[in-house]
Image (tube, rainbow, N blue to C red; front, side):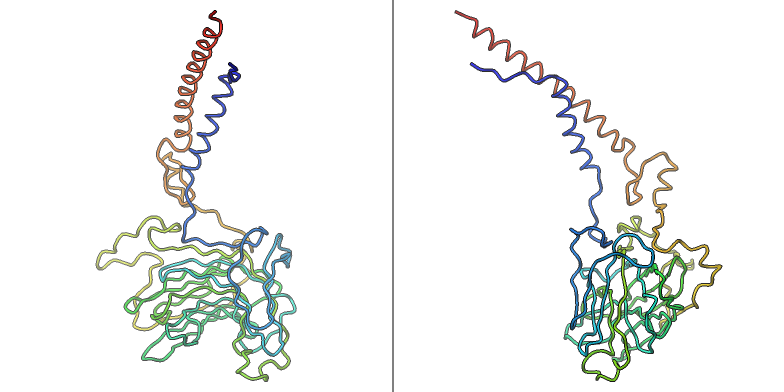
Length: 369
């Protein structure tokens, strides 16, 4: 009878230990949150969001302009008499609180016109299919950025226009929108930062309170280029070309990935927590001019990412923290692996001794006359 070669104890220990380490690491790693979405356009295998294109517009990934390294999405909207929209569409968000971040770039030869070019919008699809204005829209109008917020009052659409400063073609902008959607009985809030500086805000109603929750669209949309508006709006207009990069969407509702600790209720007569919407009888927009040179000097560099401090408190107590800033058990991943290795070593040694005993018995049987 042929007996398989006896594996060495070292090989058996190595194999078992490596397998259990992989399992332990997999169990210790936090799962990807369903309330977080990001697109950096760097990986050819990353599936892009749905594209909403009317006419012959395009959204293509290629080298980023303006001295930026890596890839970016190039949005093209030709003036061909029928094209008016080239956008990426991200749906599936709830009507809660989210942080939307993205970078965009207008080329140096961007043409200024007294018509809106919407570069990001939050759109609420209505149950009756009625095509109405986006609830929130970031656009270039002339040589400036502006934000338009819409809501319903008395059956009529209301609008607030918030100036956000000069557009500055040839410059990468890093935008952050912290949005809490209003409900029929609760005001919402919007805070806008550009290159790390707060440039505008809005308190109060910020959607229509009917139909689907607002979803996110980013790219280029010229409402006045819709064919039904007539050709006169296109006369003398160049095609719209711009770039977008580093899209990120994260829920900021209590208990979510970006805000893991629920906010304690505010006692009567005390101030509301920072960032909470302040109830008001009507929406209150605020805006500011383009950031001054001295203000921008202290802002984060364009395209850079800030370092999270969520784990600072955990670090002060000697505990490790995961990517969400939630303290890990005192044993941590290292303790799990160490305990597992000791257990595997004992099991492997036992298996090795049993295998040797079995081999010795087989040899004695073969040696008998």
